[in-house]
Amino acid sequence: MDESYDWPLSDTESMTFLIHGPETTWHRLPGVYIFAYQTEDRWCAVYVGRTDEFSTRITNREHWEAAVLLGATHIHAQLEVVDSIRQSVSAKLIQMHQPPLNTSLA
Image (cartoon, rainbow, N blue to C red; front, top):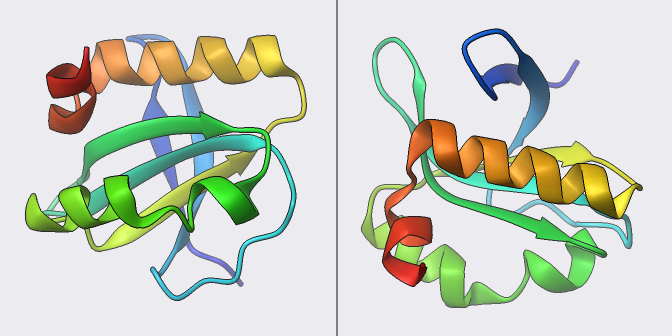
């Protein structure tokens, strides 16, 4: 059974993401992902992204290497085929969690 984490999108809603190690083999599927690290009581987002294909976007090491320098150890991923939902979810996650790599790129 895969581990998962419920990421708050707002004060009233959340979305469950599956937790993966950096060595995961990714498929050509669309979704939202979070580079994160764990503290004693929660996960902390370092970068939030969305992609048409996990296999090409997550394997692009530029953001992952920067995220690792900020403590990221895992990748949380949620399959989502509808682009407008991917955009909405990623925007809500960035607004709610203020990941340092997203705010520095803004």
